[in-house]
Image (cartoon, rainbow, N blue to C red; front, side):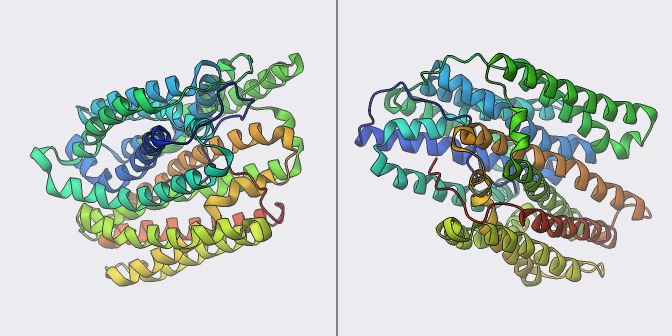
Length: 492
């Protein structure tokens, strides 16, 4: 379950728009942009529950299922900062509506996918359109609401994110199980189309236009190099089960490192000329930011893979339906909702302590889950629900405040750039986690099986992932000890 509680925004810039006026039109505008945020998180989580049904219908292999989920997250992360810059220059309303229309079209193409390759490609395209749409949300809210009203608007944003985290697994399971019009898993994408049309009609009339006074040129080459480098690193990892580790795999890893080195050199060159890069390497000299990058990659690296492997275990291993899988995952979302408000309220006083406590709680929940699945039998609903509920409590303490705790150690002039990069890194961390831990799980299922994989094989594979993930969060907690003590006051 990819978390979207942390702000997914680009670089903040000086506004060149009329003063906001609160009224009926702004309420409609808020509803439209909240819909965009809701659909973004929903589509990042809903596919996890539907993954086994997609694999069965399309004949997708394990690596292709990993790509179906990771392609969206990676493309979204690659598009966030560039999408934010486009909105700054060409108008946030215009870019939001373009992104929403693209999201609707790519959702329909995902639903029409005839094979795994088409689905993966359309998921990547869907992530790119979300990367255009989502960064405009914060700018539109700032342009629509007077300063005194923004807190309520951002509060509504947080509530919608919580609702989407609950709706994702439940709606995905329901739509797959009821098999509406015989469409099966395809309804999880078709549902985006009619509601997007409605949002486009309302948004065209209600959304205010705003843009930045900045005239900085877009660093499209930097965005491409960063995405290409990460893709080259992920490709041999996800394809391990299919390709094995050959000279070509190591060549791809080496190519990824070289491309990322070229990316950093390109960004330094832009900075030296006084231009605005996608990523300013000087930020790495800020200790809080460098530590924050590591903490973000580690923290979000375990979440997407955790729910992918758990969903496969529950459906292919224990024989649960997609709807029953959603019900098992529901306590995690509920736990997150319960503590997220507490985390935000206390972040300004005890942000670092909350981050460490949240990471340790997630680690503890995964060890509890390991203890109930390791013997190879079905532990039953309530033992699973308890472990997941505890994990959700940990997520709610840490995820919504991580970016703002990191920004507390970043000078104000760098806060916008650092926030945009951190939000992007959160998505990339999730994609990398799916690549690494997902590969460990699927390889373990295959290696432990004699014939068709059974429940003990899936239990063994999930146990390995849980131990690895728990260790990951223990390391994350140690890294977080080097972060600033409290979060910066950063409403946007």
